[in-house]
Length: 111
Image (cartoon, rainbow, N blue to C red; front, side, top):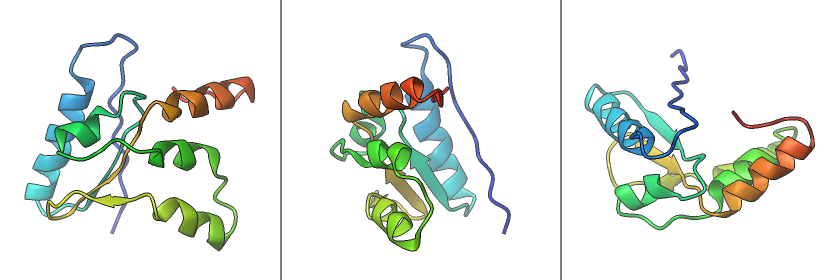
């Protein structure tokens, strides 16, 4: 199985990035593709659109270095089942912004 990464980005707000990401994730699951949706938006709206609570998952995804099995296990605990077949989510919230600022200061910006 080949892993593919699809990114939906635009610096401008209100252009439908979250809606596109959630809809695309849904369509891919209908084609029997397993999808992990990672919400990098500090507003955490992917979770909201899927009827879930926003959480700090993306903060830990961005700030934990995947070097050891324990760190990978720690990040995996933030993967949430959406209640939809084949669709999982790492939710974001306002702490996602803190992680983005931290990475920017370390000269590793999230684009």
